[in-house]
Length: 470
Image (cartoon, rainbow, N blue to C red; front, side):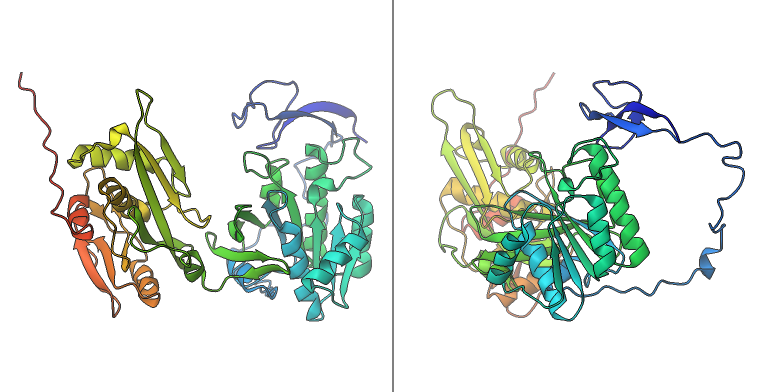
């Protein structure tokens, strides 16, 4: 048996150092070192010279056969979309989100749907009693004859319950509440979370059980606990949403069994989370036509096109106060760049430099791709000149520093979604070629051309910069 020692371990990268410092020497993170008590491994005279008994040596990769384990659908279409078909047996999935966003509701609905097909499911409720879980299951319609529940926080008891039930799916709600009595650390500490996660991963791989770990996030929006928690799992799902809206978004941040970037949309109702099959219609349901500063942008989330409304508002600055720049649902770093392009490349009256600028994506959706640049620019010009964009027009394209409009990916899918919802005109980069039936393409090369066509006004004159001769 090795001796005990105290080390400082980084919550970001997992490296250890013998003494505390303000900054991790490995990854450079500040204030990320926490104290842990660990047991040093006993020295071995032949360590590293012989292979452990029972382990395999190196083999040719071409001779390794596939495991044949395919994804098993959960029955929730939006969840299966993000997981590229469903949960893989033996995989470990981490579902992270803010408190009250609906993580327990989503996992209980998934477990109930899987159990209704005859598969054995185990729900480990570390935060609620069994009676509370049953009450929620009745409200969600998730009661199934093969759905088991245990209210435990002790890791050995949880592993014993998994061995007894032998479930196909096991949900741990939440991993931060588990603890192992063999460790002296408190529940939720870095050592406990890392140790419990490793034990659960070992159990999942050895038994073929698909394990879902529910995790909390910090106020900065990152997963609580050590960063190594995200490294040991196969999939990391981020569950987001605005508490003032019923829309919830599920994204795959990491996925070893499929692509990332896919988006699943749910609507929170009284009877639980309901998948949104047509999110574009839902996001544009309350749109007010003929409003200055508003335009529709076809955005891409993974492989799904979404039509979102981008709004802008400009207000004169009062007194000598600095102009404000407010961004909601867009990339905050691109708005100053777009304002600089408008200020430098176009003649604007009044100038946006002395105006408060507010931009927003309606509905709680976040659009971070550069394809929204042209829509943001047209919304700003529409608000500044108080001229509404035609209600049947959509716009997308990346704006360069020279004011040029550049091509973006997935143009056919964006246009097809716009045509499906009845839009008749699209302002696109000049290099765009094909258009679906019913869509008129307005090919433009610069933001000045786009503004003149869309706002039914003469093209905005380029601003001529004065050259000071020596």
